[in-house]
Length: 218
Ligand SMILES: [Zn+2]
Ligand SMILES: [Zn+2]
Image 1: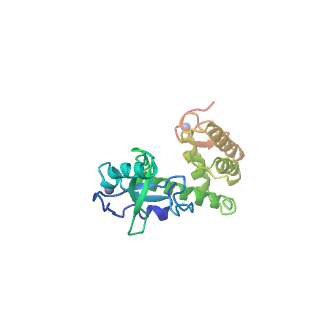
Image 2 (image 1 turned 135 degrees about the vertical axis):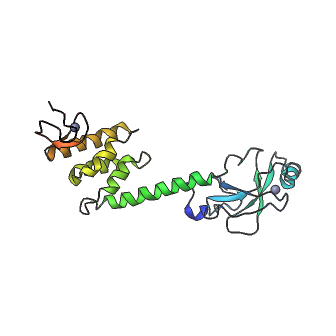
Image 3 (image 1 turned 90 degrees about the horizontal axis):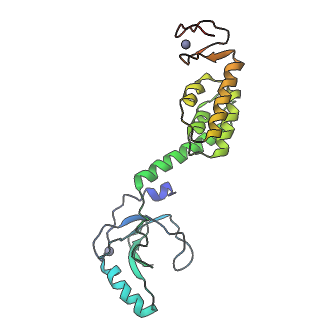
């Protein structure tokens, strides 16, 4: 995941001084380069133009100097004005590291919502706040332990507002789905209610006729 700090640089326009191509915004590689101190950033700008003179000439230069099949691409760190050559071991190196900025922004928004919900979860019963519980239970990408915890808190929260979002959610994680739906059944039972088998509205446990669909109940 790319940090928001790095993403804020995503729309900067930097151009390669060798070929004038706009630099691509890429993930930094998992390994360190040069000084071994790490990148200090999770994204950087890179010239991915295969016709760039730095890249084209680099093969010969490195072959002569180091007897190695590698070349250079021009790179620049976010927020800096000057770049430097970076050694690449193949033509395709880094071509798959270009960041899908929009997808990344969505991921970050989701992650932040999850973090907020996980904090709110700790006090949700005292606060009578069902929102983080529903959020975590229905976010299939959220942390599994938090989702389980949210299911456990449902009965205690005793809030019918959780019923529709959970009943209508298509659970990919069946264990969470079962736990959440079971909790709803308990909440209904604890409140002497049930769902009408015909219209799914909530009715009294002893009702003979549904007040919503007016059908007779068995
Ligand atoms: Zn270039
Ligand atoms: Zn009904």
